[in-house]
Image 1 (cartoon, rainbow, N blue to C red):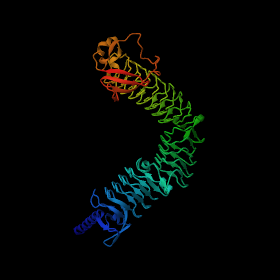
Image 2 (cartoon, rainbow, N blue to C red):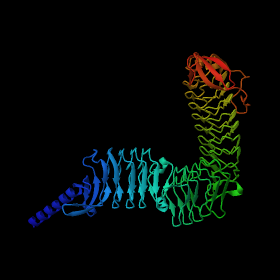
Image 3 (cartoon, rainbow, N blue to C red):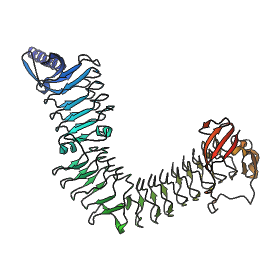
Image 4 (cartoon, rainbow, N blue to C red):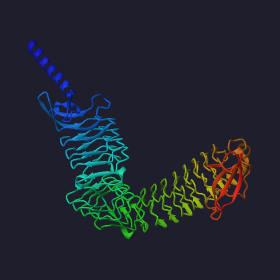
Length: 592
């Protein structure tokens, strides 16, 4: 009995040893041209071969290399099915490679750094190209991709900056490739795709295609027209992002449209069929020329109620996408992130009662939006919501809003009248950054925090009223207030204000504070450096939003800064400076 157990153990050990040796057995065999090629043998896969390198991380190949379909070694015939990880890594003298129709996979970094390789043909047998497979092939100009590819890893052609031709022969097969990430499709770098040698401009997707996978035509700027088949049911993430499509007709069987599928195209209209069940976020973001949006009657997930020229999610009453002709229905309760971003034709908008939230970047970059009315029902306005609305002249932030988010009104260059509701407690970083026409700001008593750079670049600011609850004022919150004259601060205890008035005229301005706190302000950093510090009086303006806001629409703004010897600088420096105004005049400013 003991002997039989011992024999069994010896057999098992022998098998384990054999498997271990064979699984990692390297062989080297010259090809028909006499070029030695190195392989790993995979006996677990019917004795197939994987091309590898002679030594890890060392250049093993040069010149023209032809990989054979089969290799005979010690009376065994092996089929070559894979090009292994880093097999040709940094083979900078490799000038051409022939991949046989037996290869199924090209693994990660297989040809990374082959800087002399100019063309590559991927045969129909290849189903997988892993990440960085051809990364940093800096001389690669042309890639021919076979019809069998089903997966391409992220950064597969990373840094192939000379690539000018990506050629395919089967558009249906291309639509079915699973691109692993935003940088997996080489079209995103080359900006165009070739079908049978011709640049893809007007494309017809054939019947039978049910899905256009993620990133399929991402950044294919040559694409101006596309016809979709009735068989199509889904369009993936970024599928047509950054193309030049102007019109799109969705088939009646379409079920889903992926995230950013048509982001930053040139669409002029959107018509959603009743079959569509899912539209992911930002699907139509950044199409500034849209004039008409409709949803077919019978769609249970989306609608364009009351002919509002908008795409609305029915269940949540959220406006997902608007255009220059949108009228927001009263039944809408939320405006999604990016809903009207970049709608250059939008000149006015009314946010009706019932809407409680305006999403981040909802109206970002609506450069001709001059009039905005926000109802008192709104409680949340997202970051960048109205940033860079260059035509906007006034804004009334309702009292139910508790926080003005980052960059909400950044770059509103004609904004001059601002009314902040009494419910706001936080004004976050860069909220009103670079609004050069604002001459007066009233911070209501509800505000406790004024964030970094929140009013920086408001170069026309002359009068600032700060309510009695402010505890802290961030770095450069009122920076570049070159015309600052009066600050009325109603807090009994001086707010923490480290460098809050950087590069402003505060050392020449008058600070008005509660009489009981006069001496305290005179001994606190930043505050003590004001030119004059005096007690508040009953005649001074109060921190309530009922106060009329003065404007400076006709006042010249500061456009450039110079040293005394005429050298242009980005910001004012300590000592004597020269500033150039928008009307061409210049002034001298001393910063202590």
